Image (cartoon, rainbow, N blue to C red):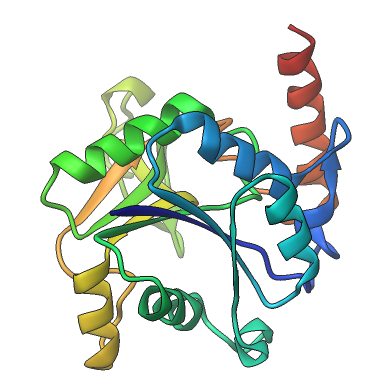
Length: 221
């Protein structure tokens, strides 16, 4: 069984109630639900939140609602905690986390991601954008050298993890969590490239404005 799980905490520090913010009049959480339904690859679609207001939205969209405990809605709660709690309540083979804050991730990308998770032997599948440009960390080159200038197309691309969509095998995740190991990266990890629009994450007001521009262009067509 493959479940879609859309996290929707009401509180957020950088962009208030971001899951309820709208693009072209449609809330981000509603867009995520409809995208999962359109993909047609999930046995069940769940909205995961501490706030019952999201239960109403889930019911209106004819999907399921999981109310996580209040203590898992605080700023100190980690994603590992609420994902584990969800998996214990809803046994499955694979859980696919689809973030509402990645509204430009397309339906085809969701479908292809899930199919890749199904046929691969990955325990974890991370969405990423391939950055084929000079990248450094703490002033140290990662994929290039100060000793030689290369054309960008010759560089090894950096896999920038976006979290737009993420997949886990339930057994690997829960086993790692219960043994107090990092569950997010437990087992064999794979990387699934998505386009730059799909990797656009809304964390700040300007991110929302960028998404609004592209959504308006896409939906006007």
